[in-house]
Length: 369
Image: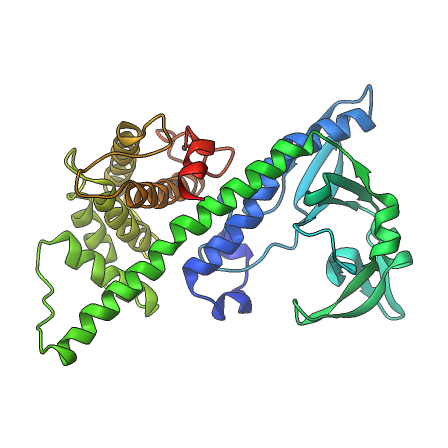
């Protein structure tokens, strides 16, 4: 079974827009993918003289988020230690002033008549980012040291381990410094590029208000990228789908050219991503989409500068260029993983981390922070 059939619709996605859901899932995936190499080394040092191979687990191990919504019940990591499987749940905290460290009940133990018994087939990995501390522990330790109570931020019950007890098992590790830094950098970049959604909403709002306030006519012009983008953006936010999504997608791909700016690419790829999610592609359509993705990737590479900027037009400000480029890169990475996973296309190369396609990520961060 694939991720589309394995996961039920999540009620959580209903309370947020689809792109907000994607952004939140990406934040989780960014941390997990950045910590993967560290966990490999840490377990190798614990299990000396044994072969250790750590990988992401669950349906989100390759896709990073599920387009249909939903959550995976599987642990975050799987470790093969001399071919014996071990599972790990991963959590981290951005603050070190918490009174309690909270763990979801279902991840800690399974329900029985008398209550819950701890899972014996997995452990927890916890990173306290501000202090560069970590802990690896059993679910049984959580039940023994935690209190069952309501977590206001989650609006649900969980096992809550008091700070005084949790601090006792934490160990310092200076090798976490760069990992925690890059997690923060990538989250900042993700938030920065996502601001384009609100910017676009505001621009469309002003445009529509002018119909009444200034008696202007809003025109949707055929064969115009801006009009196409506005329609797709509105349909996406209304949670509606075009009847001829495949036809729209192929038509949209004709806008890809060497004359595109980063703004053009953002608008094209936003529409492509939206229409792709509504389509079941035939081989000729898939071939055209794959070629379009590759052309857009080449354009982004051409625009990228060593100073952490992107340059495609004299009419766009440096920060706008960066924002458009980052959003485009993010969508290209998502499309790449999705096309490989569902269609088995080998012309595209899979990515190991989010924003892997940004070559000067620290300099980009310096330009936008």
